[in-house]
Image (cartoon, rainbow, N blue to C red; front, side, top):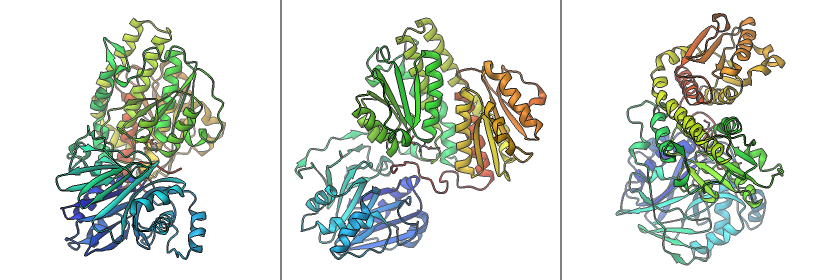
Length: 605
Ligand code: F6R
């Protein structure tokens, strides 16, 4: 949700900013802009559309500048036009912003009374004016005072007239990282922009301030006292954040799933049994828990649904799964002796973070399952189980989902043992089942030509359905989301038995249906639902594991998933679903990694 970057040092800043923005473009790509210190004045250059247009416009100019800020936008307030593009300037203040200032209309009124005029519909221009109105010579004082009047979420990089070669930074609810190398000081929305220079970074706490002054970085606490930075070490490399020969990040990330799964699972298995010892989750945590709440957004929510099915089945622990944006405003009734799990790749999703805060305020212990180290959700949860997917750049998540699902298996098997629903031998067998499924994932990746050939046939499709029962239904939801977000084909997921209660009316020979049939105990029921579709002329693709038989008349086409049907099939089925989405989008000429209207990290409500 917007990416910001800032630099002060010895290098030409134009390159540092545009390189940084290129690695943050997944956060939004409606417009891009920079503000540069040149000859003791600030020059602002903004451009609607992708960063490449801004780079073209900058050309070889502004080579002398050594300090500046940059922004890549995902529009919230105001259309994605040049005038609404960041940086915004008011009085002596120029800034870029990631987040939303919720009380901006009220602030706008107050500032207009003070004589400010606004050119844009953005909340960011109001923030610039507010900071300017608080400015009496000290940038840090002005920022601190202005922030006290702002409600919402923000990470700012700010330039003040009269303070050449200085960038100031502050955050609340939006991410910000900072670093130094031998040439100068950096700040950015995330590590990807900084990794090419250094793997040592710091994460300012909310309310702390950063000053990048002539290449030096100073951190200040909320009383504006300089403080010793707490350095962290990055575990991701620049190479991991590059395409490495693949045409798209999404394609690369789909192919990285076997390694990502092994990296995530193996540190959590000791002597064939699951453990979260490496994560600091106390042994016996699930022993006394009577109910588990899982809350998340989008794909992470669908992972939560898989988790519910697994945890209830294997550990007999009741689980409630809810969309974070609903949960947070529902005043939920939470039972004593319960615990919660928040699932988030980015660890910054605003609704998931708010749900976490609500749960903690109500005294419910929260386990976070997060991919981005040091992110807000990871930091605020009582326990954080990191997934080791590595950096995920494509907007549509793939490998991060698979490793989240792997965590669901581990939680289910661990909880089953702690609750004495299964004995150690059964736990070991379940872990073996999980490991066997992971070892089969390369086989699914090798089926790409078969999957691509099906996806090619979707070129002119306008609408389609994904159906399944039980675990297959949760997977159907993920499959349909993957397809629609990157190929723009309308897709809906249905519990297979529910189709006939109305939606079957939409099935025609032009409405392909992907039927997931990997759960042996539900197979005959799903097959009946496939037949209902076939009888209405709907073309059915069946995704069936190799051990399961279905009669030829139940589908037009079958893709056989390696391995056995049952609880571990999701790890294999999802790869087929991801590839259907990917190849359909590619066939339709879509920008696979950067689908329209979306951004990777959703730090607004
Ligand atoms: C879909 C997708 C989104 C995210 C959702 C939550 O491919 O990526 O639906 O799953 O925005 O994001 P995180 O996991 O970062 O909280």
